[in-house]
Length: 310
Ligand code: SF4
Image 1: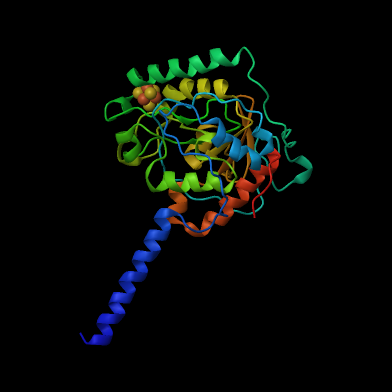
Image 2: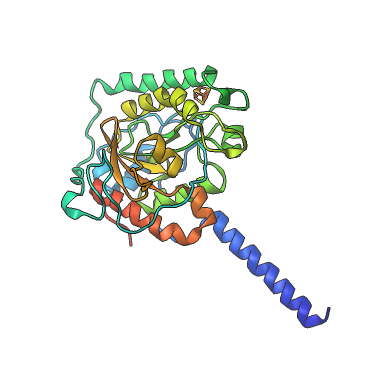
């Protein structure tokens, strides 16, 4: 091997390393929004009022949110969506309030005023979440309990306007007890930031709370065994919009239609509006789809009445 060949191979290795790094940190594909609220762990005490306030300056609809305790629970996962749906014009789903491509049927944007001061009923809801988190820690209702290291319940604001739901914990989540950590979690944080939210200003959880072996998708019986925990989370948080991450979660929340179409679709689940998009794990493998995912997130922002960052 001569000198030129060696230099060529070295350049090739460096280029591959750079591409891998960019994929890992997800430093492409989403707008860079300065959200200066502090990053909090799931077990951190409530988001500092100043931090949320800073974010709220850019998001007036959340400005009136009072400081409430962040979720103290462990949680989340990264899963692999199967065959991605066409980014083309979506069709209506049976329970969907509207197709994103059909402005005439688009869901009515949520009032941008956001939520006001907590009502007396909100405090009991917070205790329900804590109670459910503790139930999950000892739950053995399905076979996934056998292989878990830690249960993974949630992270983020328990009164969040926006909720993200993935399919189940991955390896890093299983070890840490925290949702969406590792590269996929970093990308999700990037997506959240691109939408103008602080990392812990949203609520994040999964369909199942224990890691499926080898990161496979949860089986239907596992989803059903765990569904009551997810339903309790949705009812307690009462988000204005749920963003469903990946095909498996879309199936669990019945966003998928008879033709297998799911991405970019609005739907409803337990009376809450849902919008499905790609899972961050898929986007790490297919970074060219980030722009498609961003188009979904812009639909979410329009629905929520929030400004779309450029
Ligand atoms: S996945 Fe859900 S239902 Fe199954 S053991 Fe874990 S907490 Fe219980």
